[in-house]
Image (tube, rainbow, N blue to C red; front, side, top):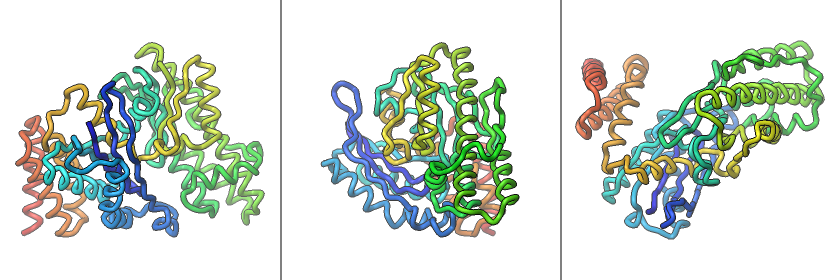
Length: 394
């Protein structure tokens, strides 16, 4: 079985092809990722409108390259997978629309994939990690500790109360005048800095729940920087080192709490798995290794190329298909679109243009026509939103 996966949730346009062998295991045949760092660097962060336009310009060539590298054709594919969120809605629509077009033309099933579930299941593809395992998911937009008990079976043990870890790194870099993306810049500066110079807080430390909070740490760093401005190169390095050490200490403490909650609710974990771009940070990797050793469990760190979004999108589709949970066609896609449209419709009604209202209204109509909705509550909500859309267009 061959599956094409498309990923456009943030600032990378990606496509990959995976093959399921006769032994049931997956093999990555291609993984093409086009970064948009150059487009966003001048702004110090991802600009959603620029990201969406860049996806439109690049996605056809990226998909063609992935299929060519895999040595297959569109007709030989068994299905099409596309990330349906969480993510930047403009980029998500680009990827889903492209995937829908390919599925309609080739007559292949189309599956909308949860971006975070793809991260959660990466270890099953790269390392064949058995269930259940404890997942530390840390990226620019998400910070969570999850118990992964099976495909579609997850328990959230902890999450951030405010900023994600990657977001805190990026904002720290911007505050200190470093480049984008901020995480690697802060890590590089920290290597030459003194992590003990600034006494930064360790938020949520020693609490029994496994939640994170990074906002206070970020504010404390800003106050320290303002107190000694203008900053020398040494000051910047020391601030980065102090900030990174604080994050490392917080990760260690919060994961200890998370592993305790895991054992209480799910028994012993088979492994500690890290996913998301933050897991590429060497200091964080070192503390994860220490924690796994103390807990007596394996540490699974997928290759750096698979910590990012890229190849991840097709993994849940592949596993769901193996379990017979996907019937094919447009059904999963249309329900996912219905939920997205219903969630974002109020924004379109209040602030967006006439064109945006037409777009969301069209998505809702497609969802209603394509699938018998799963509950009266969703059906009623869709009808209300559709009615509001029509009123706006008068």
